Amino acid sequence: MPVMESIEAVGLRQEVWTAGDLLQRLAGRERFFVLDVRNRDEFDKFRLEGRAPVPTVNIPYFEMLELGGKEDMLNSVVACLEGDVADQLPWDLPILAVCAKGDTSEFVARGLRQLGYSSANLKGGMRAWGEHYATRALAEGPDLAIYQVSRPARGCLSYMVASAGKAIVIDALRHLPPYLDLARAAGLRIEAVIDTHGHADHISGGLALAAETGASYYLHPYDAIHPIDVLPAPIPYKFIGEGQTFPVGRHELKALHIPGHTLGSVALRLEDRYLFAGDSIFIRSIARPDLGGKAETWAPLHRRSLQRLLGLPGGITFLPGHFSSLDEADEAGGFAAPLDELKKRNQGLVVLQEQSGEAFVRYLLESLPEPRPEYVDIKRVNAGLLALTEEDAAVLELGKNVCALSRAHAACGGGPQ
Amino acid sequence: MSQPFDKLLDARGLNCPMPLVNARREIGKLEPGQVLKVAATDRGSVADFQGWAKVAKGVELVGQETEQAEGANVYVHYLRRTA
Image (cartoon, rainbow over all chains, first blue to last red):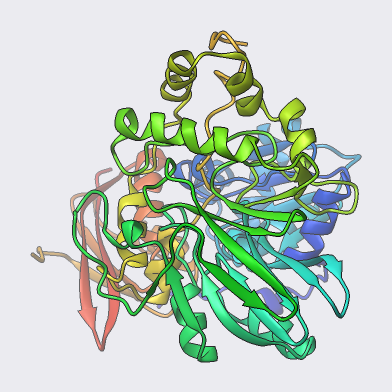
């Protein structure tokens, strides 16, 4: 008969960090150490990253079992941590134990505590961190409010624009409560849900949010065709196209068709004040043109669209669809920047302004990170061509987005830095 | 495609790390050459048993498969004690 171990049975209390606690510490550059006990593939794919680098060591829990060599988990952890591994652990920093779902790391945190380390367990593990949402008001008044709703672990950004009790949601992420709760708390009626493009890195919540709230769901028709399968999306969407306007209370959003990252990419302009840029120009980098499998053909389109965006008024605030590092946040924690500043600081835009068209296209094609194989399936899910269980959906979109150009080739000459 | 085994460990409903911890204990009770079949519902067990079999002495992962039971996936692992 298997012997059961129970956390409750041992009864040593220790600190627990929720995903929200973790975000605060990462954003605040608090110093701590991470002991990640997931298997190496999972670790390589998705690890904790903050504004500043977080010192981390990865020892899979099954290696701890073998290294420690005891029958049960806790005693193996303790024996393992007392052995060679001890050299890698700090005495002067809190150690956060991390695993996939937060159960195994609880043994590890307890083992650490038993040995006298200051330890904490990440509640819910990397799953909970990956599915944590943060909502921040970038502007908040009765005339106009802009909320940035993010999944900090994934670097995904979405928006709710509100005026006079009405709201439009842009690039809704997979889980609906953040939007429904916000709309309820602020007394807003969601009238339209717009995806700026067919997403490859994450599962859109747009269609589900529209269904839940009775709003219409909008997508550019070019992105309602899966680029690899070349199959139409059997989903109830309304067309969005160049110049189309969407009233929201006393304001209006106007669509700009900016093909490049996808053929049906749009940005949404709110007067001369804000541009919901989707995946075009991020804070430090620009979007990649290759996720539809047509990099050579789409890269020149991408260049033309980026040029067009460069021509917008310099004071317009860009609100991107992604960030790559928490460090890109401004002092208040928001991800937003005026175009004039992006022209000076964004690596892709600096190259765009300095290089000829041909050289820029070459730069684009030389700066492509390895695409994730699962992105093809994620696009299928978003097009309604593939249905997944919650568990499969969570596994499919685990990890940080790779929608931007890599930074390895970011120097103007494209050489190594 | 199931295969012969000498002992079944039912780890369904158990969260990580218990399917692996229990399998490790059970295989220690087998004779060299015997096979332990582990049934788990924890999806992470698939990659973890693969990783564990690489570092554990005297254990070989003979096969893995996914079965359906009552609408849920059951992840099955066959482990042979080699020494």
